[in-house]
Amino acid sequence: MDPRLKVILYGNPDEELSLLMRLEKENEYPDHCKIISEFGKIVSIRTKRRFLCAIYNSKKLKSLKAPSVIPANDRVEVDPQTHVLDQKNAVLTNSVSKVVFGIIDFGFDFTHPDFINNGKTRFEKIWVQSDRCDRNKYGYGRIINQTQLDESLLDDLPFKKLGYHPGKSDLFGNGTHGTHVLGIACGNGAVAPKSFAPNASIIAVDMGTNLVNGSNLSLGDSVKLIEGIDFLLTEAGQRPIVINMSLGGHGDAHTGQTLVEQAIDHILTTRKGTAIVQSTGNYHQSNVHTYGDIKVNQKIKIPWMFKKYDRTPNEMEIWYHGDDILSINIYDDNKKVLLSSTPFKDELILKDGAEVGICLHRSNEPNTNKNQINILINGKLNSKFWEIELVGRTVKNGRYHCYIERDDGGQSIFLPAIANKTHTTNSICNSKYSIVVGAYNQNEEAKSILSFSSSGPTADGRMKPELVAPGFKIKSSCSSSNRENRASNKLTSKSGSSMAAPYVASLVIKILEKEPDLDIISIRKKLFNACDTASFKDNSFEIFRAGHGYINPNKLI
Image 1 (cartoon, rainbow, N blue to C red):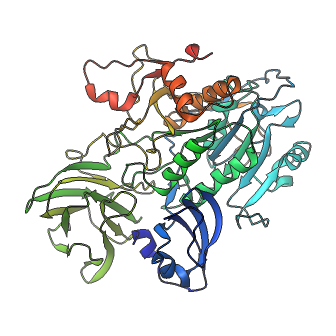
Image 2 (image 1 turned 120 degrees about the vertical axis):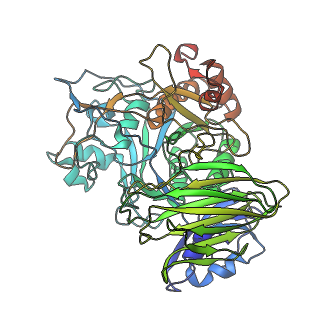
């Protein structure tokens, strides 16, 4: 059983659970499932906890997953001050692109001039997932339509009138992630530099900010993400659409087989005129990944280091070949044994008689056919580091990958001497057909890949990211802070692969404006053919971060 599923197994039997499911056959469902969204064999469901085990044991089911946290891929490098233009540029146009821009993020300032044309909003709808439910089909959140947005723009207090303030989490006035990304993708040039898609209509999913592990950049979860994609595609109807998702964490197997990634591939291979663009992540130097090969009876020690006074939960995932059997021993910083595990047995981790965590060990995870160990630590560990000792019991393959999950409130790391920088793409960007983008410094003649931009390949050896785009101190639209009643003519600067992805997304919109019925293979081919080849004489590993190279818009436009 999925480790996160085990965590929610016990509780109120009548509590409704949101889950992701992979079916054995399309349109054949286990009992007691309310289907919410569906992408081939991947569906999101609601069920009561009392039915969870029956569903899990159903022969109609291939895989069942509990929600996993989806954080924003935000580096948040900001200039000391935001920039305010004396006046906005005049933007008047009656033309509307036939391609829709969809975005899943948080904090969309609909009052910013970059998203207003002739006094009217360019947003068709915003689904605020964290809001009180308005009886939509998903059962949570509120969907705000274009008429409501236009009416609020006429009010002196538009946020109050609408009941939605995009900058409620922006405590320092640096601007929200979603507004900044949106300006890069389809800003009309009123304040931020004009994008390649200034006339695109916008449909947005605001996942909200859940303050998970103390981070205001942790958004919703994998179920809400899947249902957000469903919402965007439903609202787009028959129109071509480009969806930007600058989201993702550290964990999972990095083989493109999460249920989110399988749904993405299904969408892209069955719906023409559709592209999903993702940021590769900003984890190249985060020291959260290590891998290697183990032999039978060999013991490999992996130091896991914690921040001083860290009181946040911590998680490590270990993925290894399904033909192998590993066990683990865990020692604290005084070399005291906290756990000596039995393969495929779930066991508590005890320190001085107190429970400080749990080790969950699963054989043959059904999507990857790999074995999976999850070490979950509560906020009471009071240690500087632990030592995780892998022991090879049965070894035919030997390869293992270890990931420490993202924790913005107190990120733990591997000892830097053993950490690996490759295979550090984010947790949900490894599907076959999504377009994954890394970031380079566009202000340097050498166009160096930014130090934090994550590196491929995927764990199964495929190229990710597939190209790189400008990502250093990108000036774009700045949302209202939580103290402001309306956006002014403000810009802010941020760096990251989150800024590179929407730049590429805007170019994909240009492709589909000319050829709206292109399939994803043709879209990818046109995009990659428009790249300038990257060459790294001194560091051949950099190619794992550059893919096909630097996107050159002049080759497309």
